[in-house]
Image 1 (cartoon, one colour):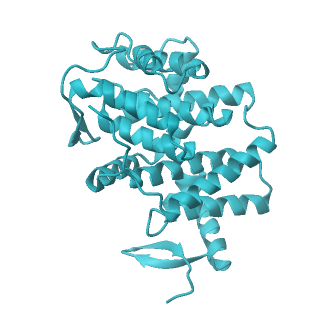
Image 2 (cartoon, rainbow, N blue to C red):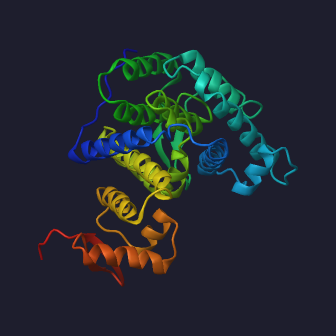
Image 3 (cartoon, rainbow, N blue to C red):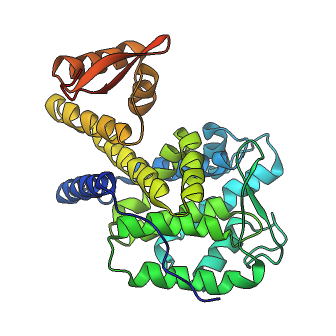
Length: 327
């Protein structure tokens, strides 16, 4: 089966997000933060593994995942413990993988699913349906006979396209899940490969816990995938993933900023959120910045006072939207 170029549109908000991410990556590079301290690297990697597995219903807590990786005894389902061990092994090999190699992709799947699935390290041989968290079928995967050609074509397109890797990696992630090449582990491998592709652009993405942002915004993750399915193109998914990447970067910067800089970066994250949402609430701010309700209210009030946001009624609660100056 011949591979056709994946359909998507580069919209204004995608361009804004791409430019903002590139600017932030540049600032981190100038500051020498492509490779964080060893302890932070380990913490971020554990967060990435915990979050990616939690999306797939792994029951272990972050503390339990940490304990497993420290060699401690953990009371939990053996399957979930094995998933953690396998994931850590392949994430630890991230820098040795060729992001455009089918053999490396199969090898990564083999390590990720070792002793967990029958068809480990090989493309699936049976038809499958992709389900959401509620068990609803949202997409039927590609027929098994077509998988090798489509994966080879997708990897070649990702390697050869002249588009920025920020956009190409998001397209790859969506198309990979759409093909659904494995009997199990597609989500874990897809998120791993997204980070791998970005890490070849800038090393900081080998350590940036994008998966934790996806986990925090899991319903949006599936909604963006469904929206792209309905539209027959990956535009909505690209927009979501870029906003998740920007959130992960801004979270990394947050602790090192002076008060004035922090306000600027908080506004960028809020603006990014509002590109795909009609408004933002106190609960969104609490989750985004890991702050109390009172602090979230102060953040929102300050942006209202500066004329950047305005407060509106949304049902029985207050919400906030961009203040355009129009009534």
